[in-house]
Image: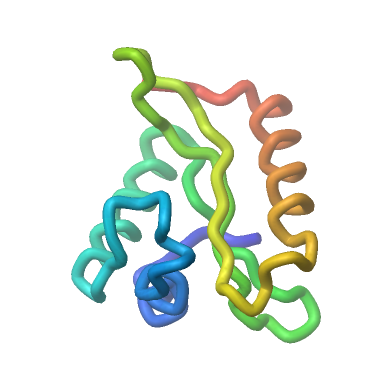
Length: 115
């Protein structure tokens, strides 16, 4: 896993433009909306030290998806949530489980700061 950059737009669009992957989001995203997503993630890195990280295959560098710790509002309270989204052809291969475990461990080890 690595930090997201603005160079990740096209890779993220592989997920964000796929209706089945975006079923629990308000809608699919276009390039402009994806860039906004990246900018919010970069802001989360700065403010909170966490956000979505890009998940790549270690041996090939191939983009697999994103996973991370993100702030969410729940009943008026800001809480941290582990979340993930992977490209369709990678579903069912254990990447979500493996990356979420790493995020959870990181969150507890660093005692996440919330603003």
